[in-house]
Amino acid sequence: MACETLILNGRVVTGDGSTVHTRGSVRVRGRTIVQVAEGQLAAAAGSLVIDADGYTIIPGIINAHAHGCVHGPSMPSGSKPFRSSDVDYFRNRHLLSGTSTLLNVCGLALADEIDDVTRNNHPLDIHITSAHTPSNLRAALAIDGAGLRDRHHAATIETMISAGVRALGEAGGGQTLGGGAQDYRFIPDAIFALTGIRLSPKWARSLKEAVLGRTLDGKDAAPTELIEALLAECGLLSIMSVQDLVELITKTVMPPVALSLRGLDEIAAASAHYGLPGIFHHALPTARTLLNLAVRYPSARIVAAHANHPSFRPDECVASARELKKRGVVIDVSTLDCITTRWRNDATNIDLLVREGLVDTLSTDFAGGDWDSILAAINRMVQREQTTLPCAIALATGNVARIFPEFAGDRGILAPGKRADVAIVESHNLARVRHLMINGRFAVWNGARSDKIPKNP
Image 1: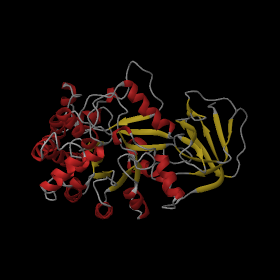
Image 2 (image 1 turned 90 degrees about the horizontal axis):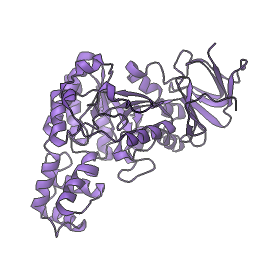
Image 3 (image 1 turned 180 degrees about the vertical axis):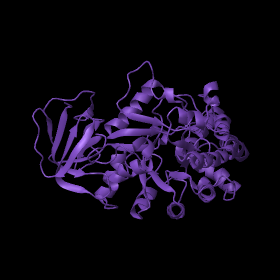
Image 4 (image 1 turned 45 degrees about the vertical axis):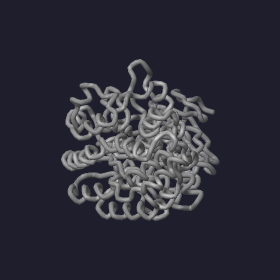
């Protein structure tokens, strides 16, 4: 007989966006949820019984937009893989924050690079996407491509689907479309190589937007005098001229942009053809392109990633989200470093989109490794009464399962017959994870990673 776990006396939020049992129970048998009810269920002989008084019981978090959690080429730039120790660190951060399922959207890794054969598999259920189209591969090479080998270039959407991939993208990225990765990596690296001075990401973003404009087309580029003043303020004017900066920024940011925009079209076409969800880099420079793709490919399953992107002003992000939703596009927001870290970004856009009821899903993205947890964002939403508790939980559980049924349709809801991915979190601070069950086994126990089913506490 399969082992049974009974979780009692907790507030149960099922993940369907509406159902809350104020004092409920969840029964798990083997790898499956078999009963969810208001009130206290009776324990069978030999069951593991967990008293969740003071805690909230929710589905395991499904993060459908993350990076750095596989051992293949990283980011849409096809950069070299992260060190195995970094991959473990990133995975553990997600796990200990209540995530049970994760979609790594770097897009150019292969299925056999999810896990490192020299290490034990991680308890996180990790999936990958594919962006293996001609323009996306060429865009990666135009900015970096150091992690790409012949077999990555030989891969196609078709071969990746045959290997089990069930989502496409990320089409475009901060590396290839002048976004955040340019601010925290490529522009600071280029300036450091030339001057020996390491700029902060905020300064890099200011200089980039002054030179290229916020949409990268130069239409709202700053006048020479303002660029000169910015150079003086960040300590570079004595080392480089305005013309030097213009040439450096243009050379660093622009080579992959046109290719990457074509890559968005290729992923939209593939999404329409194969019927798979496609994740698209959504920022001010791509907003009009994404809207056009939604019109051109009405059957494509388009997910507008990180719709709270800092390139948008608040009114712009709301207007863009509204227009996209009218055309059936999924609106995803990412925590980035907006919630608690706030090194480069703040919560203005994500707060506004949530309050306006425009958000479908919630993810982390990467933010240079500084992403804040999904449950921290959910806790903020609930504490500030931006949305209801069941709606907030659904953004990272039931909604994600509905939008990505190909790899998450059997989870994301606490209901009989669903896979037993269950998190137990503190009710007064949802970001504190006490226990996390993945596929019927406790991956986190008392806040620490555990691959064992505990004995009765």
